[in-house]
Image (tube, rainbow, N blue to C red; front, side):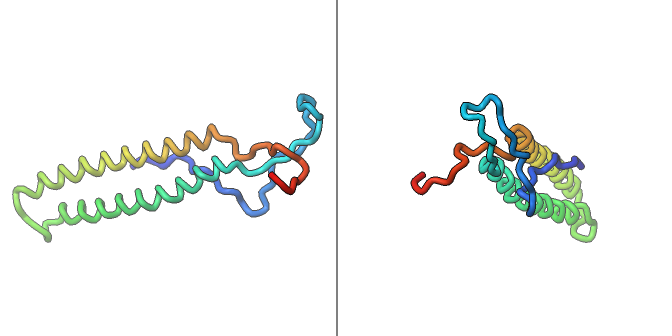
Length: 126
């Protein structure tokens, strides 16, 4: 069985953005304010939606596979063929799961968790 790639981490209670420092390259030289990246949050939500569905599919196929292997369910020459087919389905589902979770994980690794805000002062009409 393959190990799942690292999941994108949601914003933790009490987590602080990067320390705000004066940026010498900014036009006004003001300190940078940060906010949690909404694009990163979408990846966190996507992971949390996809993982239970993939777990459910894997569990359903595992139960059917165990029943197909059991001689209590059937003892027919055709049973071996069903076991081979289910083994192939399990392998394909494992590859699918790995590719979906790896795609999300890789995208999350390339997406910054925190992004600078455009303005340091609140405005009434944004």
